[in-house]
Image 1: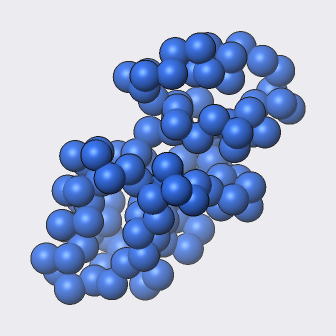
Image 2 (image 1 turned 90 degrees about the horizontal axis):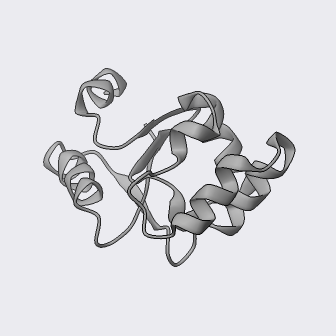
Amino acid sequence: MNIQIFGKTKCFDTKKAERYFKERGIKYQYIDMKEKGMSKGELNTVCQAVGGLDKLLDDKCRDKDALALIRYISEEDRAEKLLENQQVIRTPIVRNGKKATIGYCPDIWKGWE
């Protein structure tokens, strides 16, 4: 199992996800979205796993302008704008190879063990 957690340091769901894997002794790699972010390939893999870009968008994010821009531009430009404005992505994103979840989803993670 190769777990990656993409999150933000101040996000409570990210902390809960880290605690979930730590308590079970499962090694994971933590990537801070504010420092590093996701690559284009990682974003594409996550989008395919969760069912599209719209599921990645966080309605409660602070940057409402960037969120509105991403929601209403053409489909082909959305992924590029999302890569530029990763602060509108919901966290944590937990990846296990080609599988991925958004948010705190311990029921799905149990199936990965």
